[in-house]
Length: 239
Image (tube, one colour):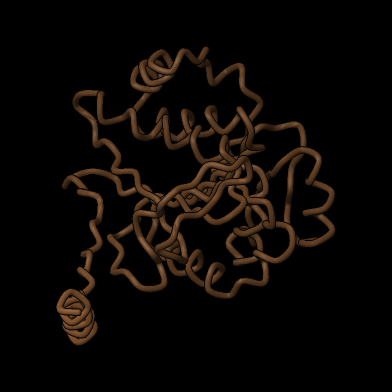
């Protein structure tokens, strides 16, 4: 009887003093000064290669001496993990709807599963891209990421490209744009659009060569066992 009394007393005490949940403070990546801040825009359905290829190239700039290297980080519209098309779960570094973001010098828009349909109707997504483009030095897209840039109006008056089998779709959706075939990437002003897939490596290496010169680009390629020669890559530099 006495045991039951003490047991009841413990239950009452616990119920009257609920355990407080510990508030976990969000940790942001440390961004080094005097580097380019490179943001990768991710969401559910992002394709692995279009994300990881340029991420690998740009992240490896920290191992090269005498250059302005790159801080690389991910941004999304959530604090929860996003799931890539192939199933990799990624926790975004920044939530662009809620967090104070660092100045973004280079925005990378990898392709995602719904870039040809529902993502184009996501006003928060499109407005974020528009806002970043105002001050960013470069905006790059891979594969169908070009559709997001087009929807944001960033490719108006520019030459661009996208995933080869989606070029005709893009021409139908955006009939006023100059969209090129038979090139793997196009550089026009601050915009670099690429065919995506494994060629995302080459578009990223091109930007590095443009910023740092041939020797640095060659070293970055060697570090990832990539045979890099810009003269052998079909591309278009407009201006």
